[in-house]
Image (cartoon, rainbow, N blue to C red; front, side):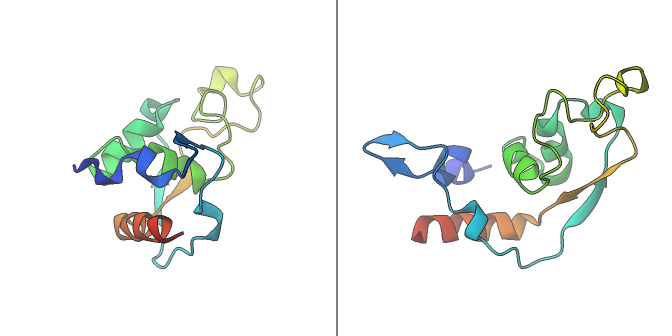
Length: 116
């Protein structure tokens, strides 16, 4: 996979430094339907593996998190096992669905971000 779509290329540079809070993600309009993905136990705290399964690269884990606002904290919100359900009652569990954006929209987002 090209380094063109590396996460740092989606983040604005201010005064020579990357500003992780400054991006155009909230202004981007997704054009294609999202795919549903059913969480499995192996996905526990591993959005990189979800990216690998859906895009063939681990590089888009952060987009998966951004497009699923119910996942705020990968350490406590991702596919916990049943023993931990009382400790993390809002966490995703195996069998729940998340949304996966189209790779074409990710490419469009890169272009959109560069224009902003």
